[in-house]
Length: 82
Image (cartoon, rainbow, N blue to C red; front, side, top):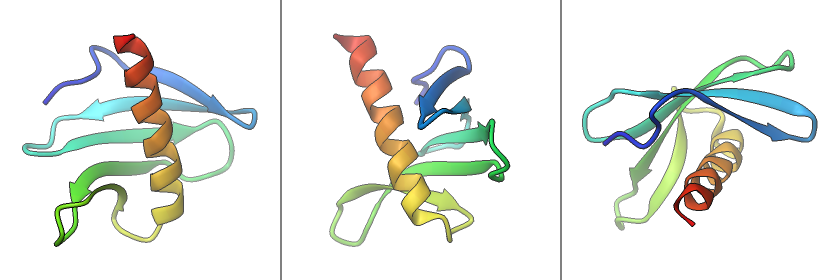
């Protein structure tokens, strides 16, 4: 599923994030590059065993960041629909 036609930027607390949608079958996934010293990350929307949808990092280990950035991405696309 393609959501973004081209890369886009978001900002949080003075940190710019360059976000590019990735083509991963059956997933909504993005590569995020931060303007700070923070390492780039890949995040994907997925479902747990109870079918609850959530954002996660690939590889796992940056769950809090994935949830925060994922929420910003969700808000970005919601604002584009309005």
